[in-house]
Image 1 (cartoon, helix red, strand yellow):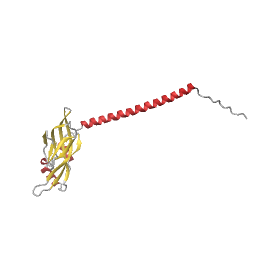
Image 2: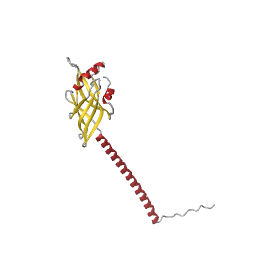
Image 3: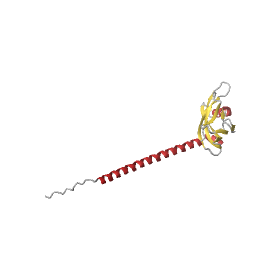
Image 4: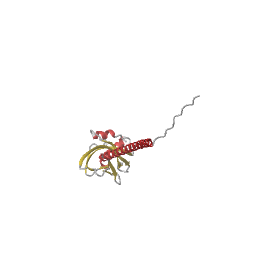
Length: 198
């Protein structure tokens, strides 16, 4: 029987070892640079997204409503202090108030504007609900960054009815919440459309 011939072992030369080590180091360097570039791109994309969201938030107009102590009035203000309200036109559902209300330099909603109509609308619906939301369509002219801008939106005005002995129920205003922004067309019709009798 013939024995299989063994291949002779060959040791790598120093030059070959240095070449293999250089190849490994180059591969690790490329992998590290790629990982760093990918992470840097991700961080840049996140920062750009955040800036875009901040710009969109700054450009959006949103009102807050703060009721006074007895709920006879809700003061209106903006979320962003750099937005200054100039004028407003408000439309309530025609069943509550047939004509619009305009304010200049004193943004607010007063219970007296809607008290009679709201009491009648609630009574017509059976008069069971003592709390509810009333849609109010608002066109606001405001100044931002020296530019005059306009916002058209529908808000929900929170209210509650408090019975009185000799007079009709007192309407107390509770606050304001955004229902729809960027409303086009007839705002009186939009307020009517959102009104569901309590």
